[in-house]
Length: 108
Image 1 (cartoon, helix red, strand yellow):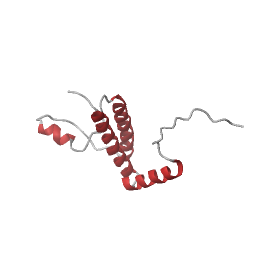
Image 2 (cartoon, helix red, strand yellow):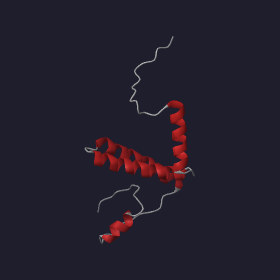
Image 3 (cartoon, one colour):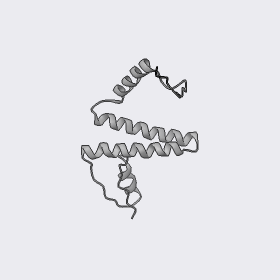
Image 4 (tube, helix red, strand yellow):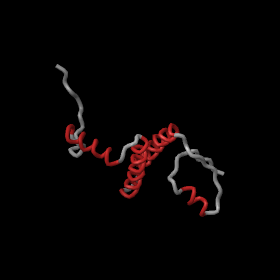
């Protein structure tokens, strides 16, 4: 039996059961949950970086977005609140649309 030991989406146990398989799982503590969200974000980011097509990249971006929603909830905020912070930072510091790659700053 494969051992996974990782955070999975809420319906995965139901999906496994529908195939006639059995599994073991448990509910994580709050501390474990944020730790596993962080691990899962790294996993999904690596999968995004390895994507070979636009479709694969979009799938992985959607997974990352789902994890951002989950992480926001851990911090008792909403995705809308995270988006407000993003917009404010973009107003003050800009986004990344211009593709600027900073190479050096001269200190006088």
